[in-house]
Image (cartoon, rainbow, N blue to C red; front, top):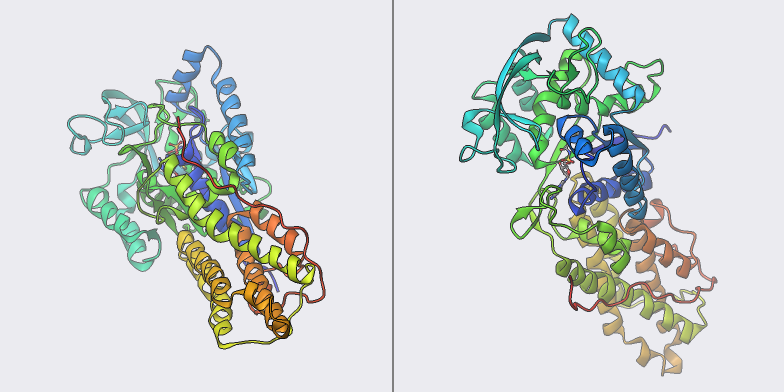
Length: 513
Ligand code: MSP
């Protein structure tokens, strides 16, 4: 049977400065979803990358005394290294300076111009340079940019425009017919009420006041203005309008674009309109997640209020960071990021629940049975609940991931692990061990525990892969595929467990600087 395809994307981030935990947040969650879909047997394409053009980057490069390309190359190398440290399994890292992307955007621009969807006009507007956004008077907050709170300046210049207004009715119709297109649902109402109902203004898609961008082929003093350039990455990465459209034909439309809430409007208004104008199918879903905030404000490159995420990885381990990103904040809501919360979460779940369970179970099996796995099947009533909970995960976890509730998928898995810890306290193996006649019951109890760990770890492979690999190494089992999580009792009997290896150290909250 042909594998089901799954195409997932993150925003392409601005390489105006090194990335922070907020960028990691989106990328880790998308990675977990991509990994989970692969585990389920899908043919996955996971795209991330960098959005490298624009006035802001040009300015930054000037300040640094290097060319824009030199400036971004350094940050991109740093980003790729960061994704490696976080175990991000993207299938492609696109840069908007890639030749293939540049040519694709030029072709898109030309087609839209030729068919009358792009026209030349003159732009007057309030522009926020750091955010690269134009705003209307009514959108400003106290006369300042509503996103970053800084001054905006009035700009007037010759520019090309994309006719958004022409497509407004089709767009609303599309929303109505595809209720799953924008999630969470609250963001959809915000789009309709704040942007579409007041009337869509045509979008400026070229600039002449700076030149760090993709040149418009038929009017060289213009460069493509950033959103048309940026959004097109989702199809240029698949070879759209190139000599080889195999990937595009295979993976498009995207199953989900994961984005932060501040750029939902570009993804659910401009992007669908560009695609409609091109005659290309629309993505199935745009999910706008909330922000990680520090002291009530957004973590910001320009405010510099953050540490390099590698510091957390070095101090607490990659899976502590991944687990925190996936578990701490319900996906869709804002949440406060703090190192202290990361530590507490690691201690409470990874050390106390997971690490403890694995260590206790393997050590007991080593102590009582020399690490041999066996299932004499001396079952008691108390086992049923644990067994059922493990098997229920086979329905719950994929469903939660499909709903993009990754934190809840993890929570369900950890509920079972917690239950397994309680099962140890309730069955008291150390007391059974003292009774010669209870050896078969003791081994059954340990088998049930090992089996619970095995099943939960199958799911954990998508979320905390380094730890999952360590656990499987200790368990010495080959039953690690997604299908192997369906049935309780598949753990191979007769094999010997490997030596227990400590998974997580308890972290002291000392002086976090
Ligand atoms: N280049 C555009 C996106 C173009 S997509 C076609 C852009 N870049 S960005 O560098 O500003 O990245 C914004 C994205 O980074 C957010 O939408 C979100 O995914 C992620 N985050 C950046 N800061 C974040 C937080 N503080 N919290 C959560 N996510 C954050 O916009």
